[in-house]
Amino acid sequence: MPAVAERTAPLTAAQRAAYDRDGFLVVRGLFAPLEMAVAALECERLYGRDDLKHTNNIRCRWKDHAATGECLFECFDPVADISPVMGQLARDPRLVEVVSALYDEPARLFKDKLIFKPPGATGYDLHQDYIGWKDFPKTFVTAAVAIDPCAKGNGATEVFPGCHRRGYLSPEDGDYHNVPAGAVDEGTGVVLELEPGDVAIFGCFVPHRSDANRSDGWRRLLYLSYNADSDGGDRRDAHYAEFHAWLKLKYAEYGKHETYFR
Image 1 (cartoon, rainbow, N blue to C red):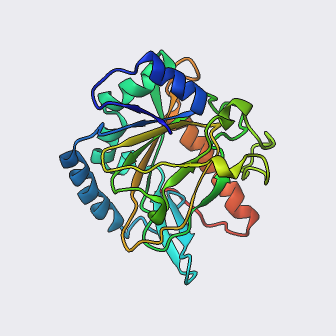
Image 2 (tube, rainbow, N blue to C red):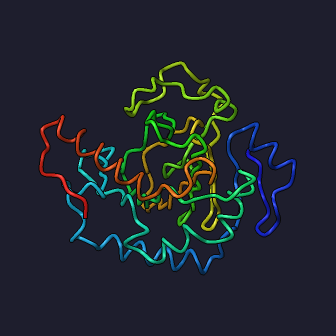
């Protein structure tokens, strides 16, 4: 089972050791119920931003419905620049302090995305978050803030403890890859069951996946990623410039040439 930190307690040596061993940590109740209620209302407002939701807008991501194949809007990436509420959570001292404690140095916000995962949306195949770009930080850590309850039935994230110690399991060629079949023992997975306000933190070499949302409610998670200050400093703007250029090239390979970022 993952290490668990109490809401306001500093990370203990045992918790740090467990994170180093497993590659992930669950912090229960880091954010209060009222804060998550406000975040949920903000999710509803953002979901109504039909001026942004377009398949050519590379801020947006889409998933098929697992049963019908319908194309569903699923994600804003980035989100902090269009939402003061999400931006405040991304830079909240309580969260930054926990991530900084894992680094033993200041943490810098690197990436921020809001995944709505509506009912029926498919999940993500087994992958690692690291990608073989020249300047991609190897200290990349993601903190997933639960806005809704997360469980197996609605497509909670499943992680594979200890596998991060093997590093990147795919070619470092600058492309996105799923983890090769047979690379991990799939019977060792741990489903990160979370309540609103809980935060699951895992490193970029931790293999993880999620199933479809087979419930009748949303499974909204705010995915916030950080790097250690010594591993590139404040790189958020530079990352998104590189990421958007890469996305446009990838879309163009499939004949989609009218993409934009808004």
